[in-house]
Length: 611
Image (tube, rainbow, N blue to C red; front, side, top):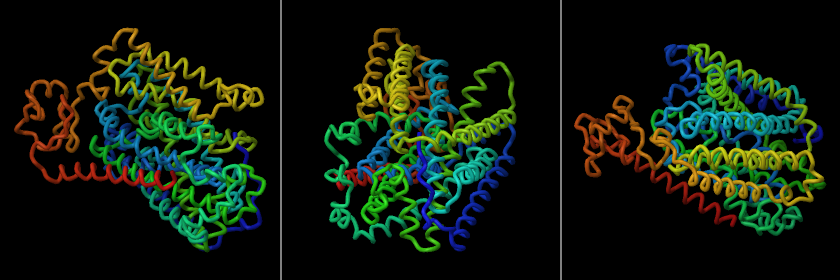
């Protein structure tokens, strides 16, 4: 749980006329984009209404996919939580952002083609195809729990901190206004409205973030000025404040946990969580999904500079505001820099940027939750009922409204809590997500993984994770005396991942192999379900590939068809091929590889800079 900071100081006066105008123009633009998406959806054929609402008709191009992957991930909790944790314990918290590009590349090159060729609507649906319905229902249940207790709660807390500090608004007034505004366009317009608005918001977010970073670095004298003022770092973290890799016994960010624990925990978020994969599934083709993931991997290098650096600068420039070392004070680091560093006009721009992040996160989770409730709960509860697309969309909208109401009911728990924001969100995720990381990883990359292995992972993961959660957040005094709970949450998450992996391997090897229908087209190493990468008109299914109508010609018996006219995915060997020699298509593939290399170079440079 969290505790809101004390009421804002007198410096949080009303916004200037210029700042207010900027925020109002932004809000009007967001609603205009959302209404446009709603009108666009109403003009779609009724037969495609459900797919249009849940997956934006699967027609999103790669720039849109990349932008929405980034925008839906960067929420207001990043401005408050990431910046606040950086202010308190240093740059090491940025490791969460700088491990994401690696997993996004894994997503684009290996995972996205599997999900797209399977023609799923939600990621729990993939688990039913790969394992069975029980695993699907468990994943859907855990996903909704994460949405309520982690994603929505942390986002609302962050929004309340921002609006109380800068504007002075009451918690309930600001939260209800933001939830209502976000809920209207996300409920009406579906994923199309969410994607359109996220692409507007990412522009404001990046501009505003870099403007404040520039002001902060100018005030402290650049990166060298930060190092020169090391005597102002919090005393308990002073020695390793600007280092990512810290001793193995560091209480917050031990290097083993940072190196391996974060990747183990985040694999589910980037390669299994429906909130993320929904954007991939909306791609026009697998190639657009790949380009979008690579674009997002480049963008994910930015948040450390946009959010962690201002938080660190806040401690150096205004140490008196963090005198008692409480996490409530550190959580105000970013909005504090906004109102103290920026002139009129830019304050409104930054407030619009933070509202962009807040509304992006809420809109993404509302739409994702309604999709899961409709497809993984309602359809399973009433499997024999014939439901029209219009009714499915209505159910999705009602379920999204229910999530809005649950979010409002959760506000008192946020207000009276005591746990630090970023530590809470990442710790709870570590307890819950690691078993799902194992299931999705082995499900996609090991043909031998079977349903009994998945059952063992679910049972162990649920019991161990729930026990750690209860002991850590309810019986805290008892928990501090046991190694099971006192161990760093990154170590605990790594322990969960390794143990669940061993369970999956051992149980799967000791029991029967999965049937071919549980493997074909559902793992990376199995023959792929044929799926074109550019043009849907040449789509061929398994029987066409096996009959020799469309094969790549790169291996014996993989002959090319004379009538094919696009870049395709060979259904037998998964090679990218250009059957007609279109140089433009092959050029895009080369660009994807170049972007991947640039992303890795940028990532390695950042890690070395703060080694």
